[in-house]
Amino acid sequence: MKEIKVFIGYASDAEAECDFIKKIIQEETDNHFSEDGYNFKPFCWKDVLPGLGHPQKEKIDPNIIDPNCRLVIILLKNIMGTVRRDKSSEIIENFNEEAKTFVKHVRGIIYDENTNHLIVTKDLLEERMNEIIPHFLQYVPKDKFIELQEVLTKMKAERKTKLGEAYALIMTIYYLRGICSEEILIEVLNDKQLIDEGKEESFKLLANQVRFEENVDKCLKIIINLLEQEDVLKGKVSILFMQARPEDLKKFVPIVKKVIEKPHLRGEALYYILEYLEKSILIDPLETFSLLENNLANAGDDFYNLRDFIPASHSRAPLNIINTIFECYPEQENRALEALDKLIELRWEGVDEYLYALDRL
Image 1 (tube, rainbow, N blue to C red):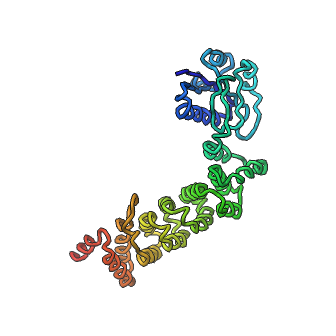
Image 2: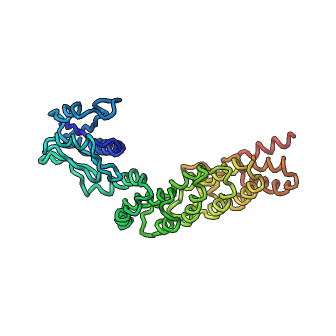
């Protein structure tokens, strides 16, 4: 195994880019180069002298001119494209011409022994860019958004490919940051040419953000539109109710109703919808009970027979909600009894124990 050290020099504000390039070099070594007898070892000055910040070039040079250090990557620009005129640009003058390597776009890396260079390859574009682009572009300031139009246009043109996943994700991030409008994002996600994985990633990001009060309204506007795409989101909706806040019950009422009415979509989400309703009982008991009635009225085989997911019939939430109505709303007793009869009819798990406890009262 031939070990080749790769030194990565970077400006002080490009540490994230450095870490990402190190990760990619290591992954490509593990996945590809090791089979060919190469072991690349990426390192930077924080690896040479940890805890000391950016050391002076006289402390770095010995590591760079070490015979075992065959390659050098210099990052003079961070993702914002700002050229730094600091020690990094001075150090570059000390590098041997054959060792200089400039990486403008990290798209996947191979080693060319003839030129002694790490080469960015087009073949690995789709494999790597959907991971890399959102990682960097999400931090673009609002006043730089116009300058990204050319990049976004190129990404859109590749929306049928794996790159479409990154395109949908970054546009969703821009929407949450207030850079991209609701209308534009809906147009992106409704595009039939957009790869399904892009819509899935957008939904997952939005669903995870509903736990933050400031993002709930923005997220639900897009989510209720995405729920029309049943084939895309089948088996992926539960995360929305796992993250939802009880305080936002009123906002989730139309979402719950829409999911319940779609048998092709609701399967794995049913259990988590019931658990969410139970968490929300103190916010609005009667609204919660009404949604439970709606759930039970639409009961089907998917309440019981699910592979790899928890069946809705395993939830104790319906019994707890019904019990709350019995105790706190005697005028709603008939409705509560009808709901309990429905659970008995459905042979709901735990209902026999509940009835036994009632008989002993």
